[in-house]
Amino acid sequence: MTTSLLDPHRDMLTNVVGTVNLLESARQLSPQAFLAYSSTNKVYGDLEWLRYEESASRYSLPDYPNGLPETLPLDFSTPYGCSKGAADQYVRDWCRVYGLKTVVFRHSSIYGGRQFASFDQGWIGWFCRQALEQRLTFRRGSPPMTFTIAGSGKQVRDVLHADDLVRLYTSAYERRDQVAGEIFNIGGGSANALSLLELLTLLAELLSIPPLQFENTPRRASDQDCFIADISKAQKLLSWSPQMDCRQGIMSMLEWISSQHPGL
Image (cartoon, rainbow, N blue to C red; front, side, top):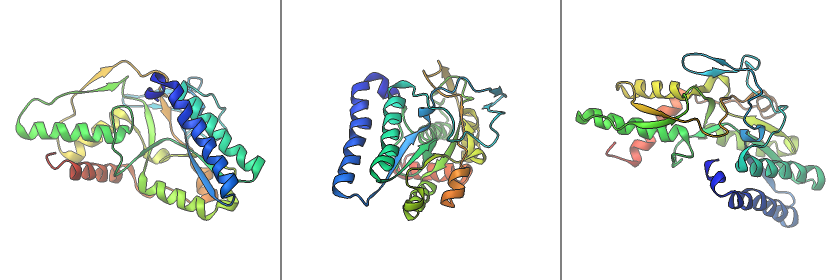
């Protein structure tokens, strides 16, 4: 999202033009192909109109205890939201107009092995790496190098491990005739929702280290305070639910990052 703000034209070419090129290639050359599109919760905008409650560690949505459904109004925000949302609608419409087998998944936060996270993308992996680096300084008896978090740290996402994501796409392929043209909100669901502060607490616990040291920076532009996907539609139509809880998944993420950086 932050990259799109710096170069909106490239973002549009990648997400909109690139997606239409794929749709047209499939329609003209392989009309029986199944195309699953990885969309984003940003198609719903900043969600500032929702009613929030704030606790010591997180924001919550009292009017949506089971998460946010696909019936939320679209409200594209940021160049990234606009380009992903436009492509999202192209994918859906190529099923309605041309009969191409397509499905749209509006994702919350995905993480897992082989996600090479950065400051701008893959927040679970990024903060796992920061925690491992602080553990190393604790072991050496050196003062930890602090990292930054944007905003209060109370912003919430429901996190989904890549293994569960693979099962989701496999299920959609197996049911491609039944779910063609459908849109699904996808994440770990309310059982796997974490605020950034809660993630940092969990990381310190899993690594058996003191509380992580960080500094707050200003809130990111267009950051949603809370997004938790209502996954009931996917449960019903795809017979799918996450199997890896966030505690187990984050432990596996720590192990994978450690395997890539033996010094940690």
